[in-house]
Amino acid sequence: MGANRIIIVGAVFWFGVLLGAFAYDARAGQSIPSDKPVIVTNPKYPVPPAGQRKNIVFKEELTIGVAEGDENYLFEKNIQPTADEKGCIYIVNWDRKRIQKYDANGKYLFTMGRPGQGPGEFQNIWVPRFDGKGRIYATDIAAKRVVFFDKENGRYQDQIKTGGQQMGTVFLLPNGAYFSSTMTENQTGNDTTVYGIFTKDFKLQTELHREQTEFKNRDPRAGRAQLMAGIMSDEAFKPALNPCVTDDGRIVIAYPAAYDIKIYDDLGKTLMIIRKEAKPKPVTDAHKKYYFETTVMYWLSRSQKNLALKEDVRKAMTYPKFLPAYRFCFPMDNGWMFVVEDSLLESSWIDLFDNKGVYIGRFKTNIPVDLLTFANGKAYAVADIDGFKYVKRYGYSIQNY
Image 1 (cartoon, rainbow, N blue to C red):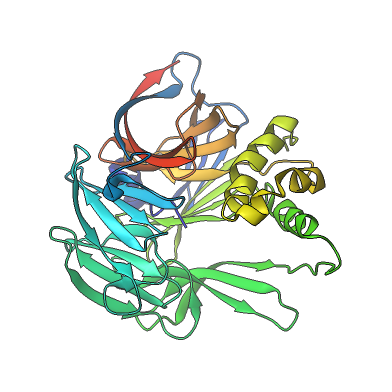
Image 2: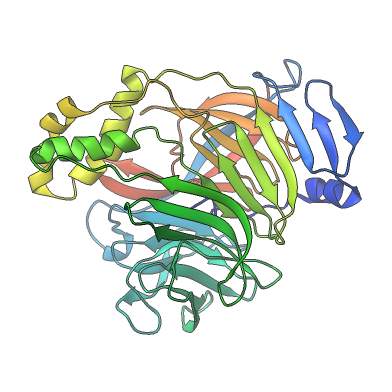
Protein backbone atom coordinates (compact mmCIF):
# COMPACT_ATOMS: atom_id res chain seq x y z
CA MET A 1 0.00 0.00 0.00
CA GLY A 2 1.95 2.79 -0.08
CA ALA A 3 4.23 4.39 -0.93
CA ASN A 4 1.74 5.40 -4.04
CA ARG A 5 2.32 8.22 -1.90
CA ILE A 6 5.02 9.84 -4.07
CA ILE A 7 6.04 11.87 -7.05
CA ILE A 8 9.62 11.17 -8.08
CA VAL A 9 11.58 13.35 -10.43
CA GLY A 10 14.79 11.33 -10.07
CA ALA A 11 16.25 12.78 -13.28
CA VAL A 12 19.85 12.23 -12.26
CA PHE A 13 19.24 8.61 -11.29
CA TRP A 14 17.18 7.85 -14.41
CA PHE A 15 19.86 9.39 -16.65
CA GLY A 16 22.43 7.14 -15.00
CA VAL A 17 20.31 4.07 -15.65
CA LEU A 18 19.90 4.99 -19.31
CA LEU A 19 23.66 5.30 -19.68
CA GLY A 20 24.06 1.70 -18.57
CA ALA A 21 23.67 -0.49 -15.52
CA PHE A 22 26.51 -0.69 -13.04
CA ALA A 23 27.35 -2.09 -9.62
CA TYR A 24 28.29 0.37 -6.87
CA ASP A 25 30.07 -0.17 -3.56
CA ALA A 26 29.28 2.79 -1.32
CA ARG A 27 32.33 2.16 0.86
CA ALA A 28 34.75 2.09 -2.07
CA GLY A 29 32.95 4.97 -3.80
CA GLN A 30 33.46 3.68 -7.32
CA SER A 31 31.35 2.28 -10.16
CA ILE A 32 32.10 -1.04 -11.84
CA PRO A 33 30.65 -1.57 -15.33
CA SER A 34 28.22 -4.48 -15.37
CA ASP A 35 25.23 -5.86 -17.26
CA LYS A 36 23.55 -6.47 -13.94
CA PRO A 37 21.32 -3.96 -12.13
CA VAL A 38 22.78 -1.24 -9.94
CA ILE A 39 23.57 -2.91 -6.61
CA VAL A 40 24.50 -0.50 -3.83
CA THR A 41 25.84 -2.00 -0.61
CA ASN A 42 25.97 0.58 2.17
CA PRO A 43 27.76 0.41 5.54
CA LYS A 44 26.11 0.84 8.94
CA TYR A 45 26.82 4.57 8.98
CA PRO A 46 26.37 7.31 6.34
CA VAL A 47 29.03 7.40 3.62
CA PRO A 48 29.94 11.12 3.31
CA PRO A 49 32.37 12.52 5.88
CA ALA A 50 31.11 14.57 8.80
CA GLY A 51 29.98 18.00 7.59
CA GLN A 52 28.74 16.63 4.26
CA ARG A 53 26.04 14.25 5.47
CA LYS A 54 22.42 15.29 4.94
CA ASN A 55 19.70 16.14 7.42
CA ILE A 56 16.13 17.19 6.55
CA VAL A 57 14.53 19.91 8.66
CA PHE A 58 10.73 20.13 8.41
CA LYS A 59 8.63 23.25 9.03
CA GLU A 60 4.86 22.96 9.39
CA GLU A 61 2.99 25.17 6.89
CA LEU A 62 -0.64 24.05 6.91
CA THR A 63 -3.12 21.96 8.89
CA ILE A 64 -6.43 20.66 7.52
CA GLY A 65 -8.95 19.32 10.00
CA VAL A 66 -11.10 20.20 13.01
CA ALA A 67 -12.15 18.44 16.19
CA GLU A 68 -15.76 19.56 15.69
CA GLY A 69 -17.73 21.59 13.17
CA ASP A 70 -17.78 21.45 9.36
CA GLU A 71 -17.89 17.79 8.25
CA ASN A 72 -15.71 18.62 5.25
CA TYR A 73 -12.88 19.20 7.72
CA LEU A 74 -13.84 16.53 10.24
CA PHE A 75 -11.92 13.28 9.63
CA GLU A 76 -12.40 9.79 11.01
CA LYS A 77 -9.67 7.28 11.77
CA ASN A 78 -8.62 6.33 8.22
CA ILE A 79 -7.42 9.08 5.90
CA GLN A 80 -4.57 9.36 3.42
CA PRO A 81 -3.36 12.52 1.63
CA THR A 82 -1.62 13.28 -1.63
CA ALA A 83 -1.10 16.42 -3.71
CA ASP A 84 -1.03 17.33 -7.40
CA GLU A 85 1.32 19.55 -9.39
CA LYS A 86 -0.67 22.69 -8.42
CA GLY A 87 -0.37 21.95 -4.72
CA CYS A 88 -4.04 20.97 -4.38
CA ILE A 89 -4.52 18.37 -1.67
CA TYR A 90 -6.62 15.21 -2.00
CA ILE A 91 -7.64 13.26 1.08
CA VAL A 92 -9.00 9.73 0.82
CA ASN A 93 -11.55 9.21 3.60
CA TRP A 94 -11.94 5.45 4.02
CA ASP A 95 -14.70 5.68 6.63
CA ARG A 96 -16.91 7.82 4.39
CA LYS A 97 -15.76 6.15 1.16
CA ARG A 98 -14.85 9.35 -0.67
CA ILE A 99 -12.03 11.59 -1.89
CA GLN A 100 -12.07 15.23 -0.72
CA LYS A 101 -10.21 17.97 -2.60
CA TYR A 102 -8.72 21.11 -1.04
CA ASP A 103 -6.82 23.98 -2.63
CA ALA A 104 -3.21 24.79 -1.76
CA ASN A 105 -4.40 26.95 1.15
CA GLY A 106 -6.44 24.12 2.65
CA LYS A 107 -9.87 25.37 1.52
CA TYR A 108 -12.39 22.60 0.81
CA LEU A 109 -13.40 22.45 -2.87
CA PHE A 110 -15.49 19.32 -3.53
CA THR A 111 -15.97 15.61 -2.87
CA MET A 112 -15.59 12.66 -5.25
CA GLY A 113 -17.36 9.38 -4.57
CA ARG A 114 -19.70 8.13 -1.87
CA PRO A 115 -20.64 4.80 -0.25
CA GLY A 116 -22.45 2.40 -2.58
CA GLN A 117 -22.13 -0.06 -5.42
CA GLY A 118 -22.95 2.11 -8.44
CA PRO A 119 -20.62 4.04 -10.79
CA GLY A 120 -18.43 6.43 -8.84
CA GLU A 121 -19.37 4.81 -5.52
CA PHE A 122 -17.13 2.85 -3.16
CA GLN A 123 -17.38 -0.11 -0.83
CA ASN A 124 -13.69 0.22 -0.01
CA ILE A 125 -11.19 2.92 -0.93
CA TRP A 126 -7.48 3.65 -0.37
CA VAL A 127 -4.33 5.02 -2.03
CA PRO A 128 -5.22 8.00 -4.30
CA ARG A 129 -3.22 8.24 -7.55
CA PHE A 130 -3.01 10.40 -10.70
CA ASP A 131 -2.96 8.88 -14.18
CA GLY A 132 -1.35 11.66 -16.24
CA LYS A 133 -4.66 12.39 -18.04
CA GLY A 134 -6.04 14.86 -15.53
CA ARG A 135 -7.72 12.13 -13.53
CA ILE A 136 -7.41 10.84 -9.98
CA TYR A 137 -8.15 7.19 -9.29
CA ALA A 138 -8.47 4.82 -6.36
CA THR A 139 -8.91 1.07 -5.99
CA ASP A 140 -12.08 -0.41 -4.53
CA ILE A 141 -10.80 -3.78 -3.35
CA ALA A 142 -14.23 -4.95 -2.18
CA ALA A 143 -15.96 -4.13 -5.48
CA LYS A 144 -12.91 -5.31 -7.47
CA ARG A 145 -12.55 -2.20 -9.60
CA VAL A 146 -10.49 0.96 -10.12
CA VAL A 147 -12.54 4.18 -10.20
CA PHE A 148 -11.51 7.38 -12.04
CA PHE A 149 -12.60 11.00 -11.50
CA ASP A 150 -11.74 14.26 -13.26
CA LYS A 151 -9.56 15.94 -10.67
CA GLU A 152 -10.49 19.43 -11.89
CA ASN A 153 -14.25 19.17 -11.43
CA GLY A 154 -14.72 15.94 -9.47
CA ARG A 155 -16.95 14.24 -12.03
CA TYR A 156 -16.94 10.46 -12.33
CA GLN A 157 -15.09 9.40 -15.50
CA ASP A 158 -14.65 5.65 -15.76
CA GLN A 159 -13.96 2.38 -13.98
CA ILE A 160 -11.90 -0.72 -14.69
CA LYS A 161 -12.99 -4.13 -13.41
CA THR A 162 -10.15 -6.17 -11.93
CA GLY A 163 -11.81 -9.51 -12.63
CA GLY A 164 -12.95 -12.22 -10.25
CA GLN A 165 -9.68 -12.59 -8.35
CA GLN A 166 -8.87 -10.77 -5.13
CA MET A 167 -6.57 -7.89 -6.13
CA GLY A 168 -4.75 -5.41 -3.94
CA THR A 169 -4.26 -1.73 -4.72
CA VAL A 170 -3.82 -1.21 -8.47
CA PHE A 171 -1.20 1.17 -9.90
CA LEU A 172 -1.33 2.15 -13.59
CA LEU A 173 2.01 1.86 -15.42
CA PRO A 174 3.14 3.98 -18.42
CA ASN A 175 3.09 0.95 -20.76
CA GLY A 176 -0.60 0.25 -20.07
CA ALA A 177 -0.01 -2.64 -17.68
CA TYR A 178 -0.71 -2.61 -13.93
CA PHE A 179 1.30 -3.21 -10.79
CA SER A 180 -0.72 -4.89 -8.06
CA SER A 181 -0.97 -7.99 -5.92
CA THR A 182 -3.30 -10.97 -5.88
CA MET A 183 -4.12 -13.17 -2.93
CA THR A 184 -5.21 -16.81 -2.86
CA GLU A 185 -6.12 -19.02 0.09
CA ASN A 186 -5.20 -22.69 0.27
CA GLN A 187 -7.02 -25.52 2.04
CA THR A 188 -5.24 -24.87 5.35
CA GLY A 189 -6.43 -21.28 5.38
CA ASN A 190 -2.99 -19.80 4.68
CA ASP A 191 -2.82 -16.87 2.27
CA THR A 192 -0.35 -16.55 -0.60
CA THR A 193 0.16 -13.04 -1.94
CA VAL A 194 1.89 -12.44 -5.27
CA TYR A 195 3.13 -8.95 -6.22
CA GLY A 196 3.79 -8.31 -9.87
CA ILE A 197 2.93 -6.74 -13.19
CA PHE A 198 -0.47 -7.62 -14.64
CA THR A 199 -1.82 -7.28 -18.18
CA LYS A 200 -4.82 -5.08 -19.08
CA ASP A 201 -7.13 -8.02 -18.38
CA PHE A 202 -5.39 -8.59 -15.02
CA LYS A 203 -3.45 -11.72 -15.88
CA LEU A 204 -0.12 -12.03 -14.08
CA GLN A 205 2.64 -11.13 -16.53
CA THR A 206 5.75 -10.77 -14.34
CA GLU A 207 6.02 -11.96 -10.75
CA LEU A 208 8.21 -9.74 -8.56
CA HIS A 209 7.59 -11.12 -5.08
CA ARG A 210 5.67 -13.93 -3.40
CA GLU A 211 4.94 -14.38 0.29
CA GLN A 212 2.79 -16.66 2.42
CA THR A 213 0.88 -15.71 5.53
CA GLU A 214 0.36 -18.52 7.97
CA PHE A 215 -3.03 -18.74 9.66
CA LYS A 216 -2.88 -19.60 13.35
CA ASN A 217 -5.74 -21.45 14.97
CA ARG A 218 -6.94 -19.94 18.22
CA ASP A 219 -8.30 -21.81 21.22
CA PRO A 220 -12.04 -21.00 21.18
CA ARG A 221 -12.08 -21.40 24.96
CA ALA A 222 -9.78 -18.40 25.38
CA GLY A 223 -11.40 -15.18 26.50
CA ARG A 224 -12.05 -12.26 24.18
CA ALA A 225 -9.11 -10.26 25.53
CA GLN A 226 -6.74 -13.21 25.06
CA LEU A 227 -7.94 -13.77 21.50
CA MET A 228 -7.44 -10.12 20.56
CA ALA A 229 -4.05 -10.00 22.28
CA GLY A 230 -2.98 -13.13 20.38
CA ILE A 231 -3.91 -11.64 17.02
CA MET A 232 -2.23 -8.30 17.78
CA SER A 233 0.85 -10.04 19.20
CA ASP A 234 1.31 -11.96 15.94
CA GLU A 235 1.39 -8.67 14.03
CA ALA A 236 3.65 -6.78 16.43
CA PHE A 237 6.70 -5.47 14.56
CA LYS A 238 6.13 -7.98 11.79
CA PRO A 239 8.10 -6.92 8.67
CA ALA A 240 5.59 -5.64 6.11
CA LEU A 241 6.36 -5.24 2.42
CA ASN A 242 6.32 -1.60 1.22
CA PRO A 243 5.28 -1.54 -2.48
CA CYS A 244 4.58 1.58 -4.54
CA VAL A 245 4.93 3.05 -8.03
CA THR A 246 6.50 6.42 -8.82
CA ASP A 247 4.92 8.87 -11.24
CA ASP A 248 7.55 8.04 -13.87
CA GLY A 249 6.52 4.38 -13.75
CA ARG A 250 9.21 2.79 -11.60
CA ILE A 251 8.14 0.14 -9.11
CA VAL A 252 9.66 0.34 -5.64
CA ILE A 253 9.40 -2.66 -3.33
CA ALA A 254 10.93 -2.27 0.13
CA TYR A 255 11.77 -5.38 2.13
CA PRO A 256 12.06 -4.53 5.86
CA ALA A 257 12.80 -8.14 6.86
CA ALA A 258 16.30 -7.43 5.53
CA TYR A 259 17.65 -4.02 4.62
CA ASP A 260 16.72 -4.20 0.92
CA ILE A 261 14.98 -1.74 -1.41
CA LYS A 262 14.43 -2.90 -4.99
CA ILE A 263 13.53 -0.67 -7.92
CA TYR A 264 12.07 -2.09 -11.16
CA ASP A 265 11.00 -0.61 -14.50
CA ASP A 266 7.45 -1.05 -15.81
CA LEU A 267 8.44 -4.33 -17.53
CA GLY A 268 9.70 -5.85 -14.29
CA LYS A 269 13.42 -5.44 -14.99
CA THR A 270 15.45 -4.76 -11.84
CA LEU A 271 17.10 -1.34 -12.12
CA MET A 272 18.60 -0.93 -8.66
CA ILE A 273 18.97 -2.77 -5.36
CA ILE A 274 19.80 -0.67 -2.30
CA ARG A 275 21.19 -2.52 0.70
CA LYS A 276 22.52 -1.50 4.08
CA GLU A 277 24.34 -3.43 6.78
CA ALA A 278 22.09 -3.60 9.82
CA LYS A 279 22.27 -5.50 13.09
CA PRO A 280 19.02 -6.66 14.74
CA LYS A 281 17.70 -4.07 17.21
CA PRO A 282 15.93 -5.28 20.35
CA VAL A 283 12.29 -4.45 21.05
CA THR A 284 12.34 -2.20 24.13
CA ASP A 285 9.60 -1.22 26.57
CA ALA A 286 9.34 2.08 24.69
CA HIS A 287 8.64 0.16 21.45
CA LYS A 288 5.99 -1.94 23.19
CA LYS A 289 4.30 1.20 24.49
CA TYR A 290 4.41 2.74 21.02
CA TYR A 291 2.84 -0.32 19.40
CA PHE A 292 0.12 -0.62 22.03
CA GLU A 293 -0.81 3.07 22.09
CA THR A 294 -0.97 3.30 18.29
CA THR A 295 -1.83 0.01 16.60
CA VAL A 296 -3.57 -1.91 19.40
CA MET A 297 -5.54 1.09 20.64
CA TYR A 298 -6.60 1.90 17.09
CA TRP A 299 -8.40 -1.44 16.84
CA LEU A 300 -9.74 -1.46 20.38
CA SER A 301 -11.20 2.03 20.00
CA ARG A 302 -13.44 0.90 17.16
CA SER A 303 -15.73 -0.74 19.72
CA GLN A 304 -16.63 0.30 23.28
CA LYS A 305 -16.90 -3.40 24.15
CA ASN A 306 -13.30 -3.99 23.07
CA LEU A 307 -12.08 -0.73 24.60
CA ALA A 308 -13.30 -1.91 28.01
CA LEU A 309 -10.82 -4.80 27.73
CA LYS A 310 -7.84 -2.49 27.21
CA GLU A 311 -5.87 -3.45 30.33
CA ASP A 312 -6.61 -7.17 29.95
CA VAL A 313 -5.35 -7.05 26.37
CA ARG A 314 -2.25 -5.12 27.48
CA LYS A 315 -1.37 -7.79 30.07
CA ALA A 316 -1.88 -10.63 27.57
CA MET A 317 0.30 -9.09 24.83
CA THR A 318 3.60 -10.71 23.81
CA TYR A 319 6.29 -9.23 21.58
CA PRO A 320 9.18 -10.46 19.42
CA LYS A 321 12.74 -9.94 20.60
CA PHE A 322 13.87 -7.86 17.62
CA LEU A 323 12.60 -5.11 15.33
CA PRO A 324 12.59 -5.42 11.53
CA ALA A 325 15.50 -3.77 9.70
CA TYR A 326 13.29 -0.69 9.12
CA ARG A 327 9.60 0.26 9.09
CA PHE A 328 8.80 2.25 5.94
CA CYS A 329 10.44 3.48 2.76
CA PHE A 330 9.12 6.65 1.08
CA PRO A 331 10.65 7.79 -2.24
CA MET A 332 11.09 11.56 -2.24
CA ASP A 333 10.27 13.80 -5.20
CA ASN A 334 13.98 14.53 -5.77
CA GLY A 335 14.78 10.82 -6.28
CA TRP A 336 16.08 10.16 -2.75
CA MET A 337 14.84 7.41 -0.43
CA PHE A 338 13.45 8.45 2.97
CA VAL A 339 13.59 5.32 5.15
CA VAL A 340 11.94 5.24 8.57
CA GLU A 341 14.41 3.07 10.45
CA ASP A 342 12.71 3.22 13.86
CA SER A 343 9.73 4.99 15.45
CA LEU A 344 8.56 5.79 18.95
CA LEU A 345 5.69 7.97 20.16
CA GLU A 346 7.70 11.19 20.19
CA SER A 347 10.05 10.82 17.22
CA SER A 348 11.46 8.65 14.44
CA TRP A 349 14.96 7.87 13.19
CA ILE A 350 15.44 8.33 9.45
CA ASP A 351 18.01 6.84 7.06
CA LEU A 352 18.49 8.92 3.90
CA PHE A 353 19.75 7.60 0.53
CA ASP A 354 20.52 9.71 -2.53
CA ASN A 355 19.39 8.96 -6.10
CA LYS A 356 22.41 6.67 -6.58
CA GLY A 357 21.36 4.60 -3.58
CA VAL A 358 24.19 5.89 -1.37
CA TYR A 359 23.53 6.25 2.38
CA ILE A 360 24.01 9.98 2.97
CA GLY A 361 22.46 10.76 6.35
CA ARG A 362 20.79 9.66 9.55
CA PHE A 363 18.69 11.99 11.69
CA LYS A 364 15.72 12.23 14.04
CA THR A 365 12.39 13.89 13.20
CA ASN A 366 9.19 14.44 15.14
CA ILE A 367 6.79 14.68 12.21
CA PRO A 368 4.24 11.83 11.74
CA VAL A 369 5.69 9.22 9.37
CA ASP A 370 3.12 6.42 9.01
CA LEU A 371 1.43 7.91 5.89
CA LEU A 372 4.06 10.33 4.65
CA THR A 373 3.93 11.66 1.07
CA PHE A 374 6.44 13.83 -0.79
CA ALA A 375 5.21 16.04 -3.66
CA ASN A 376 6.40 19.30 -5.23
CA GLY A 377 9.07 19.92 -2.62
CA LYS A 378 6.59 19.46 0.25
CA ALA A 379 5.79 16.66 2.67
CA TYR A 380 2.24 15.64 3.64
CA ALA A 381 1.41 13.62 6.74
CA VAL A 382 -1.48 12.46 8.93
CA ALA A 383 -1.34 13.56 12.58
CA ASP A 384 -3.38 12.19 15.46
CA ILE A 385 -4.15 14.86 18.07
CA ASP A 386 -6.35 13.90 21.02
CA GLY A 387 -7.99 11.17 18.96
CA PHE A 388 -8.76 13.39 15.95
CA LYS A 389 -7.04 13.15 12.56
CA TYR A 390 -5.47 16.08 10.74
CA VAL A 391 -3.56 16.42 7.48
CA LYS A 392 -0.41 18.50 7.74
CA ARG A 393 1.79 19.99 5.04
CA TYR A 394 5.45 20.64 5.75
CA GLY A 395 8.05 22.62 3.90
CA TYR A 396 11.55 21.30 4.35
CA SER A 397 15.18 22.15 3.80
CA ILE A 398 18.18 19.87 3.35
CA GLN A 399 21.14 20.71 5.56
CA ASN A 400 24.63 19.34 6.07
CA TYR A 401 25.88 18.01 9.38
